[in-house]
Each structure stands twice: as structure tokens, then as C-alpha cells.
Length: 131
Picture 1 (cartoon, rainbow, N blue to C red):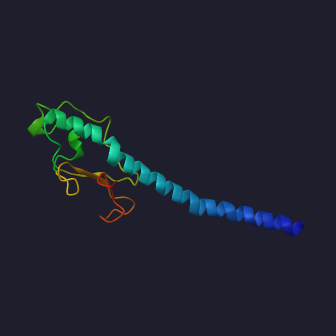
Picture 2: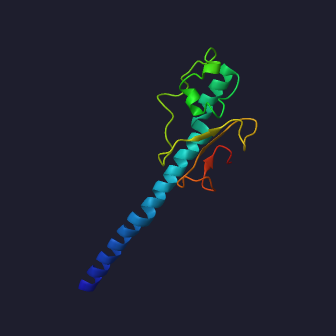
Picture 3: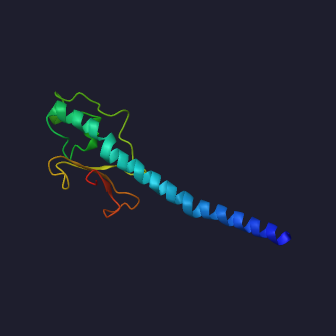
């Protein structure tokens, strides 16, 4: 009987450890990725479209996403923002989202992306060009 109790305690402790060190971090990573995907594929689209309707173009790479908050000098007479409130959020890893217009992947529009968990440009980047 003591043996069964010890085995049950061992199995319970092992299950808790697996959950803490394997399942939970995996879920956090998946949630971070999903948050970044939502921002680059959906959330930022409407503010950028509104900017384009009012100004006649997307913000330039140099103006960046900050043009959604503060009118660029070159277009301030057409600008009707701010287009986001209260600010552009950081990505789930605490870094700024990247922006380029015209895009290299979306050549007729813009590229918006997160560098993902690894801050260098590589395959884990999360962009609006992905399906």
C-alpha cells in the first residue's frame, strides 16, 4: 500500500513538472505568436488604410508606424489622425513592430512584421505576408 502511494506521489509530481516546464512555456510561446500574427495581419490594417484614404498613400518607411500617431510634416494638411489610440503596442517580446513601404514582400503595399522571439531577421519573423 505504501508503494502505491509513493508511486502516485511520484506520478503527480512528474506531471506537475512536465506541465510547468514543457506545456506551460509552449502555450505562452503559442499565445505570443498568435498575438503578433493578429497585430500584423489584422489590427494595424485599418489604421493604415485610413491613413491612405486621407493622405493618398501609406506612410513611408522613414515615417514608419509613428505616422499613425503624429502627422508627418509632408502630409499634415490631409492627416486626420491619430489613427491608433493610445499608441502602437510593442510586440509580445517587448520590441517595436517593423514597417516598410513599399514592402519587399507586398510590393504594392507595405510589410509589417515582428522579429519574433529571436531579434535577428530570420525564419521566425511574423509578417503580414504570410498566409
